[in-house]
Length: 70
Image (cartoon, rainbow, N blue to C red; front, side, top):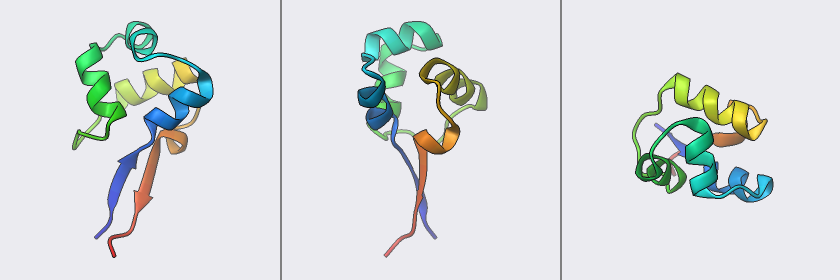
């Protein structure tokens, strides 16, 4: 079975937005956003994903990636 990888860090670099700016605009704490950015979570709320997509002007597929296990 594969797993999901969060590519939030890549999207943030492409959009030139800092962790602090994004956290403030999305309405999550810096700590929680940092965990998302560094792929240290096992789940994400759809409401958080929607807020990220709205703020970053992207689609969920830009942030989430499925990777097969080897």
